[in-house]
Length: 253
Figure 1 (cartoon, helix red, strand yellow):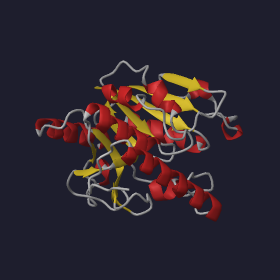
Figure 2 (cartoon, rainbow, N blue to C red):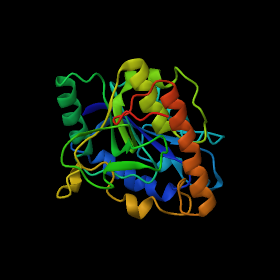
Figure 3 (cartoon, rainbow, N blue to C red):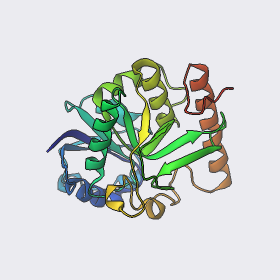
Figure 4 (cartoon, rainbow, N blue to C red):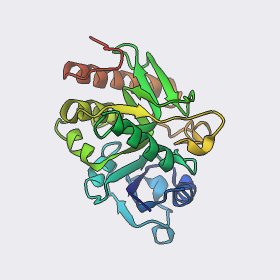
C-alpha cells in the first residue's frame, strides 16, 4: 500500500465518480485512503454518499471551486497526496509511474517535485501560447514543465507553499499558483512523468477527451467561457512572473 491520500474533486460530474474510485482502488500501488471533496451544486443532489467506496467525504455547502481541495489536503497524514479532477481516470500503473519518476528526480537532486498528467510549458506570458505534454500529446521521457493539471502527485510538504501567498483569483489558476509558489518558497520544480503512446496503463488520464469536453467544463468551447477562461489565466501567469516565477523558457513580461 502506497502512503498516499487521494482527493477526488467533485463538482458537476457525479456520473464519473464510481469509475474513478474503481480505477484508483485497482492501482498496482493502491493508496492508503481515498477522500472525496464535493463542491456544492444541484447536479450533485442525487449522489448517494453512503455507498461510496471511500474513506472520507467532505461535502461542502458552498462551491470552493479549484482551491478548496488543496485546503482539505492539509488534513492528510500521509507522505504523498494525489488529486484528480472529476473528468480524470488514471491507468492502473499511474501511481507506480509517479513513484518511479519521483525517486529518479530526487536522485537527480530535485527536492519534492510536483508531478502531473497534463504538463504545460509557457512560450510567453499569454497562457494560451503554450506547449503540452502528458496525455494530450504523449511523452516517452519525463519532462520538466511550468505547471501540471488534471491529476497531481506530490509530497504533502508542498502544500504549505501554496498558502504563502493569496491567489490572484479564487476562480481559476490553482495549477499555476501551486507550481509558482512551490518553486518560489520550496525550490520545488514541476514535471510530467512519461506518457508513452504504446502504454496507457502508465497514463494519469485515459479518458480525458471523452469526459473533459462536456458542457460543464471550465474551458468549454462556448465563446464567452473560452475567452474568460484564458483571460483569467493570463492574469494569473503575469502575477506569478511578477512575483518571481522562473519558467522553463524564462518567459518575461
